[in-house]
Amino acid sequence: TIGVNPSQEYTFIVMVMPVGDYYKGGIKPVSSIVIDGFDRAAPHGVGHVKVAGNYAADMLPNTKAKNMGYPINLYLDAQTRTYVEEFGTSNFIAITNDNKYVTPDSPSILPSITNKTLMALAEDMGLTVERRPVRFDEISSFAELAACGTAVVITPVNHIIKGDEEIHVGPKDECGPTFMKLYKRVRGIQTGELEDIFGWCTDV
Image (cartoon, rainbow, N blue to C red; front, top):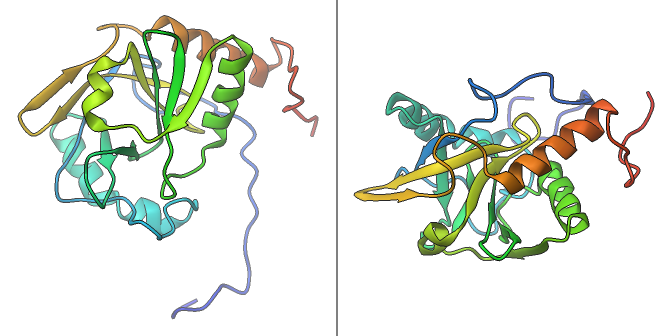
């Protein structure tokens, strides 16, 4: 539809399960960058809805990040630029040194089904789940850091650049132990190799 009107026809698509790794190299740590001057979504906008507009805002900064050698970029909140929002392709998740699963709470973050899945699994594994505002300056205190989403499931992030600031988190060459356990359990449930005690899987 040309103009500000809803479409007359929509296509409903079911994504059954990831068929491969989104990032080259599989579940290996990647570096991320905060590119100043860009916001993914504004307060009171549609950042919480999976619409094309959210991805359009990321096209230029995402391209800039990749051209600089960073496969993923991180957004801070548009209002104060002090709180973590999410990565360009996926939600931000972290593990603390005292076994807490932490993910940002913001009305402009996409409510990832993968994140909700991981939170349920984390609680089942005995971790405390915290969905709360996450200040950028506390990133360095986390034991593990990752991006999560439908295609990614979990991609460890062990290096973040913001201007002259450089932050290292978690193992250098591999996924952290807690996220690896979560990743294997998600994939095991998806492929039917592990019991689905949550009733997520449906025969089609």
